[in-house]
Amino acid sequence: MALLGSFAPTGTRPIRWYNYAAYGSNDILGAGSMAVISGWVLIFYTTFCGLEAWEAGLIFTVARVLDAIASPLIGHFSDSLAGTKVGRLIGRRRVFLLAAIPLLPSFAIMWVSGQSFWYYLVTYVLFELVYALEIIPFETLAAEMAKDYKSKAKFAGIRILFAQASAILAGFLPAMLIEALGEDSADTFLYMGILFSVLFMVTASFLYLCSWERPPEEVMQVRGNGEKASLGASFKALYRNLFSTLRIRAFRLHLGMYLGGYISQDVFNAAFTFFVVFALAGSISVASTLLGFMYIVQFVAVMIAINLALRSSPARAYQLAAASFAIGVIVLLLMWSAGVRSGDALLWVPIIFAGLGRGALNYIPWATYNYMADADEAVTGRRREGAFAGVMTFVRKLTQSAAVAGVTAIMSWGGFQSAATVQSDQAIMTLALVLGIGTVGMLIFGVFVSTKFKLNAETHDRLMAQIDRFKQDPDAAPIDQETKLLVEDLTGWRYDQLWGKNNVV
Image 1 (tube, helix red, strand yellow):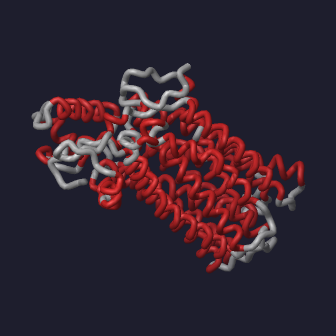
Image 2 (cartoon, helix red, strand yellow):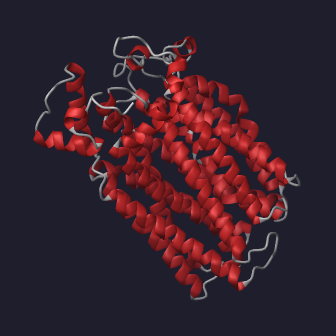
Image 3 (cartoon, one colour):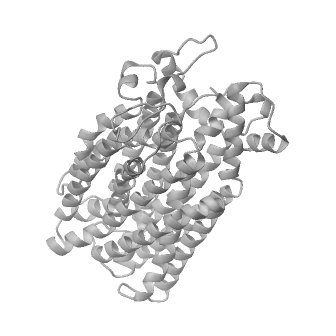
């Protein structure tokens, strides 16, 4: 196995099972850390650290805003390293992986109980920045290693399968540790943080050893006179370059679907554990078991979604997934209003529906993301995977921080009392409304956007065929009228403005 090679001519290196496995396993960091944080950090902060709900929300907001600033910088910087010595020697993406590996234990130090607000703010911000340093380059590697639709779909599929496996661990592990340490032990979360930190370092190292990038000469930024752009000149165009990605129609629609599917889960995750403990009269252990089982269902749902997205279309699969998740949330709330409480077997019904929807919603946006740089290439004639990864993370972090801050603010407004063993009827009703309206509302938004999204296996093949024609002749006529209209729909630009004949960058 030639594990250590950074570069290979695109299309000449076969993708082996261990390359797929290495790429996918890294989402133990990408999704696993977020599953732990979204499921447990609010409970940890308010129950074991003495923070108020609004203080916990403020930590999220500050960390995500700072990270949202750093993420585009990392994405743009990685795009700009192709012609540098470091980029040629290690790789413009993989150098970031190498730098992040020794910093990943920052996840564990978040979970030390009994510290001040400022300790939790600083440690959370630190991990978010390390997370961005590793994840943004990782998100570009599928497009670096593969060109065809099916290979990219496989990369996305194996990634989300690992993500769901790590989420299962994040769901069940607290319950197992609680059984060993006791219901009131804060060490539950510290040991969980240590275990995940070790997994993060192992999988990031595996990815570094088993990945490669497009050769530098294929992706080098070139100006009209053939002169390479300097790093300094590249940075002057930073924000123009980054936010020009939003001028690609397929990417705007993709972001809408992504945010609809993921923010709905942010709201659900932020409220669910509290809902189980206070509305359903359960416990942290019960919430852990329910989440763990939900993640098992999500794992199965990803495998179903992979086949459905390949055989039908990502948009149709998305719509079915959103409907399933919404049904699960609505049924859960109806059962609660009818008097169903923790321990009732009927609770597994909404958990199954929600898990089936959430699993597919996790997979589909990441499957379509791998094709966004292709639509952009038709417009700009350049490969800008890093810019897309940076902007995607920027938008995601800002909206996620807003979602979590919004949930915690509404909880506080509704009368939620930190560290209380019993909450008022008003506080519980507020939790229920957040869980229902917030989750289902974002799903409706995502479904509306998906009705306009036309990218699938067939349309991607047509797009790539037209790009190949542009590479042979920048003034090439469209293959046919149908292809012309399709490329215009995916890019959002008239045909005569494609392949750099525009002011996008």
